[in-house]
Length: 324
Image 1 (cartoon, rainbow, N blue to C red):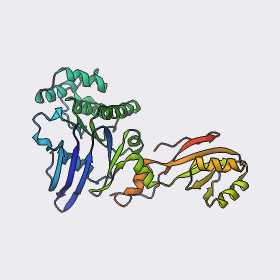
Image 2: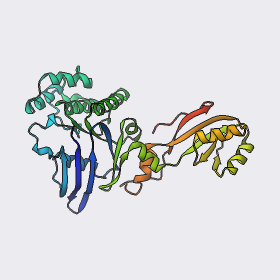
Image 3: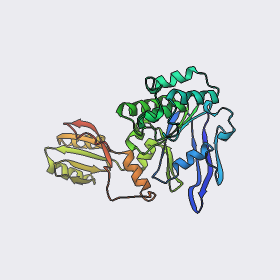
Image 4: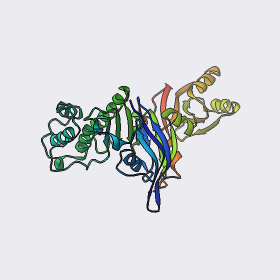
C-alpha cells in the first residue's frame, strides 16, 4: 500500500500563512488521527494532498506521485471532505453511479458500498432529503467506491448517531487491518482515541506532534493514583515517608502524584494498610491535546476539561469516566 508524504508543504493565502513548512508521512496499516484547533491548517493540508489547492511551496504526494497524476483516482485514493458536496437533486444511487462511470468502477460496487454504509433503503431518495448523518454515510460510501488503498476522511463522525459512530470506528480499524493508509481529521478527542494508532497534530499551520497515540499520552501526562482507605492517618504518614505528593478530596479519596496503582498497592500491602479503592488515573487524549495546543488555538475560553480517566485495579466501586 502507498503512503501519503508531505514535505516542506507551505500555503499562503494573501498575507496569511495557512500551512507552514509542514513535513510528515502517513503510513499504511494504521489509522492516523489528524488533529489541531480551528484554523490550524488541517483541511487546507488535505486539500493540498488532493490537488484541490495549489501549494505555495513544498510537495504532497501519494505513493510518490501527486494526486492529479492518477488517471482513475478513486481506485487509488478515497476522500471525503464535505458532506454538502453531493448534488442535492440527485439520488444517493445516482451520485455513486456517476462517480463509478467516471472512474471505470464496476456497477456492483455501488450496491456493495450502499449496503456497507446502511443506505440501501435511502438510495432512491434525493440527497437534499438526507439528514447530515445520511450525507456523512454517503460521502464515506463514495470514498470507498473504488476500493482504494488510501482513505482520507474529514470529520467523518459529524452528525452521526451512536450506531453510526460505532460503524465509523469499526470501519476505520478494519481498513487499517487490511493494510490501507487511513488519515482522519476530527475534533472529537474521545472518539479519536478509540480508533487512532498514530497522531499528527497541527497548530497555526505547523507540525506540533507526529507520534503513536500512547507515546503522545505518555509525553503529556504524569502518572497519578486515586485511592481510599479506612486508615487515613497511617496512609498519610507512609506516603510522606515515601516522598510522594498527595492531596485529599472532600469525599475522602486521595490522589497520589507520580506513582502507579501497582506501586501504591505493594507499599500499602507491605504495611498492612487496607484499601477500599485503588485506581490509576491516566491522561486522556483530550487533556493531552489541549495541553499541547493551548498556545495555538484561535479561540480559547477559561473552561478546563477533566484531565484524567480512571482505570480501576482494586477495591470498591469507582466513579465512571465522564465522557466529554
